Length: 114
Length: 113
Image 1 (cartoon, chains in turn brown, red):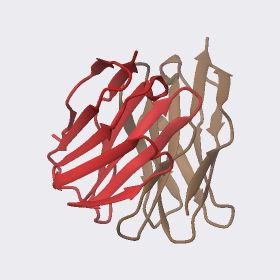
Image 2 (tube, chains in turn green, brown):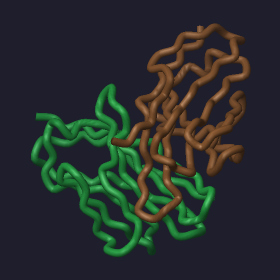
Image 3 (cartoon, chains in turn yellow, green):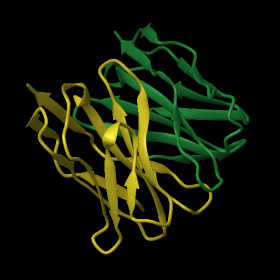
Image 4 (tube, helix red, strand yellow):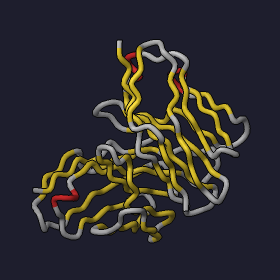
C-alpha cells in the first residue's frame, strides 16, 4: 500500500522569506510524485511532478522539489515567497503499475504574511 | 483544453436520499478517481476505476458505490445520504501512459440536511 504524509499542517511565513513544505511517501514500487496547489475557492492545479530522471524538479511560480529516494521524500521549496502564494498545497503519489491509485497527503496551508 | 466536468457545483439533499454525482472527462484517460475533501483531512480516496466496469475501493468507501459503464463517465452514488457525507467531492482523471498528470473537476459541494 502507498501513503503520503505531509509533515506540517500549517506553515506561516513572511513575504520574501524562503519556504519548505515537507512530504514523505511510502510505496513498495517505483513512483510518480506530484505537488498540487489549491487557491481559495478554486480547484487543484499542478505545480510540478517527478516521473523519472533528474531528482530536482522545477515547477510553475518559482517552486521546485527534490526527489530523495533513500529518504522517501519529495519536499517543495521556494526561495522567496509572495503574498499570492498563500494557498493549500497537496503532495500526491501514484505508482507505475497499472490500476494504481493516486494518493494525497493531508495538505499544508501556506500563509504568507506581509 | 482538458476538461473534467462534474455535473453540479452545489447540491443540497435530504438524509436518506439516494444521490448521484457525475463526472465526465474528455481526455480518454483510463483512470478515474473520486475523493472527498474535508478541512484538515486533505483528499481522501473513496473509489477509483482503472478501466470500464472495473473499480477498486479507496480508503473510505463505506456508504458509497460507483459506476463506470463508459470510459469517459464515472459516477459516485451515495446509497442513503447522511449528514456526515456533507463535504466537497472531487473527481480526477489520470492517464496510464508515462508523463501523465491528474486533472481535476471543479468539485461538488454536497450538503446533506
